[in-house]
Amino acid sequence: MIKSMFQISPGFEDIMPAEYLELIENGPFEKRVGVSDLGAFKELLEEHPLCAGCGLALSLRLILASLPNPEDTIIIGSTGCSALAFPQVALHNIHSLFGNQNAVASGVKRALNLRFPDKIKDVVVIAGDGATADIGLDMVLHSWFRQEKITTIMLDNEAYANTGGQESGMSPKGTVLNMAPKGKTFSKVSIPELAREAGCAYVASVNPAQPKKLEKAIVRGILAARELGPTYIQVFSPCPTNYKFKPNETISKVRLREKEGTYETKEFLSTEARELFARLEEEKK
Image (cartoon, rainbow, N blue to C red):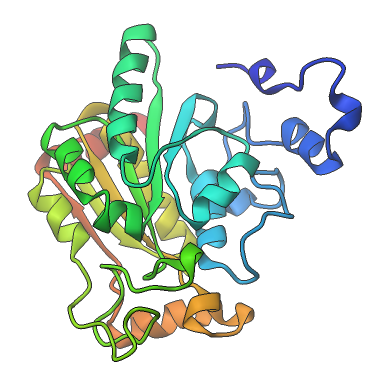
């Protein structure tokens, strides 16, 4: 994939918004960037429709900056808050129906393997907790059972945020939300453990308060998916609107949850993944 594929069709430049023109000219294409370079390139339109202080928007920016091969990456998204931002990112993306994102990603990955057998094409699912852990859990799990070589990233805001803040399977037990006025009655679904048992070669739980750890997890997840099989990364993305805290408190909320031990940063590597990362590190020397 080359940068010319992203250019605006001749004759339309004068009617496109200025910041979209900047997205094309100063995106992450044909560059090797990371989270330390945020601000030096444009990965997401500033006037995106997500709420002020949105943990999901911050996490999405960090994820986009961490991709090892953005020109040849296709994001498969799903219904949710993130779907509002995907049309405004500097990347190929496909919006799937609510919950079937891993099924779509499986087909896209297989098609790319047939069309480009000698070229690396990364397929990355980015979806919320509802699409991943609730309505889409069956298709997520079966993509892992089939050992599809895709990376699944959950933006975990612990609620159905884009439809009014109802409880989701990822909401902590006891949390008072719409549809759970007396508090959620069951514990948060342990998706990282399900991913590990379902055969994911690499699993991580990270958050935007530790951008370097998040970046490392994204890179590892994608590299392992290329060679070994499915990988899963869960990113804590607090929602100030539905959890009713100030927009400037998002990172402090993340750090508090870490300190309390109610959101744990962790990583699981299969034996094959450990061997792969050791080999890649050796090749760098």
